[in-house]
Amino acid sequence: MRLLNRSAGRISRHRRGPAAGLAVLLLGLLLTGGLYTVFAPAQAEKATSDTEAVAEGRKLFLVGCASCHGQNGEGISTVREGYEKGPSLVGVGAAAVDFQVGTGRMPMAQPGSQAPRKTVAYSDEEVAAMAAYVASLAPGPAVPTEEDYSIDGLSADEREEAIVRGGQIFLTNCTACHNFNGSGGAMPRGGYAPSLHGVEGKYIYEALLTGPQAMPNFSNGNLSPEEKRDVIAYLGSIQDTPNYGGFGLGGLGPVSEGMFAWVLGIGGLVGFAVWIAAHTTRSTKVKEGADA
Image 1: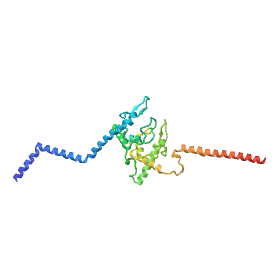
Image 2: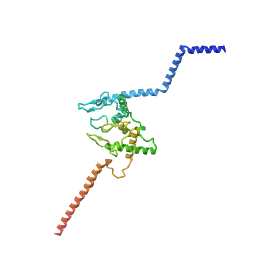
Image 3: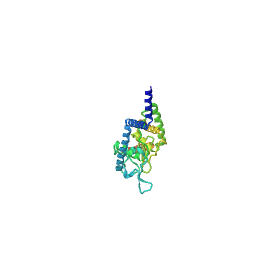
Image 4: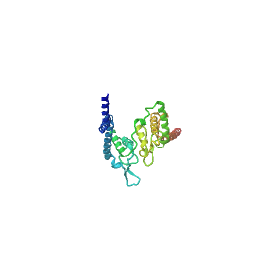
């Protein structure tokens, strides 16, 4: 019994010594480092991948974008006050780059009031790299995920409710430019609101979030992410709805319908009246000649 007490006393004294504390500290550091190495390699690889993407994006940016937007995305002003060769990209976020470059609007063939959609000049990986570089300049809207703009995960009733809400939002905020059917329309100073038919949900979400060209910016404070998703659901629903009234004339509304009525409707009636009058006159002359 005395021997056990002496052994316990020696162990207790060793524990209270400075060497024991150092050993415990080193053991804790080794254990923590080992656990971090086991569970955190994916995060380390992601950080490395992000760094590489930013570096690759900067190379692409310097070649294809810096001539208009500046070496560091600061923008380039022209000698004409209030006009820019290319606006600053600081703070526009990855979403703006993904929209503009992913739809082929950028790089522009030449400066203008409107950037039309055209064939995409970069691969998906290059677009993502350029978006990562611009996002590194300053905080801004990120590229949305499918969960942000899709209603596939909702029930049938929730989908119907989302479409109805989206229609109300669209008719209140968007029809002045894009038409009630999303067919687009003309705007001042050479601009136009493009057609929304066939546009991917991701790009509509990014356009609402970033406000490209003459479009206003609907931030999450103006339209919540759910409301943006509902607008996209509504646009998808009207594209799938058949024209029960017949020929839709592009869905451009009363302008095209009125022109159709005047040119083909009234014009056709006038032409038919002229033909009747000419035919009646000719018949009368033939009859008078026969009687003579």
